[in-house]
Image: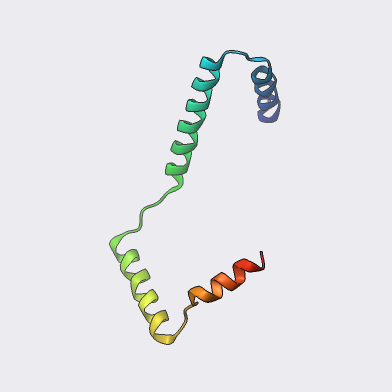
Length: 79
């Protein structure tokens, strides 16, 4: 059974499920799985990468490569 078919089968089973305890367990399992998958994609910066980012940010600030808060607030009004 391919992935999409398996998902649809599970959706059908969830639709007919009337047990709140089981639904809560499934919800917690999905939350845990999402957290594990998210954390697996996170790659911490090394000290050298962190320092390089700080140096670049300071350099951008000195060169005036910044955006004012008020500019962001104006842009938000156009969303």
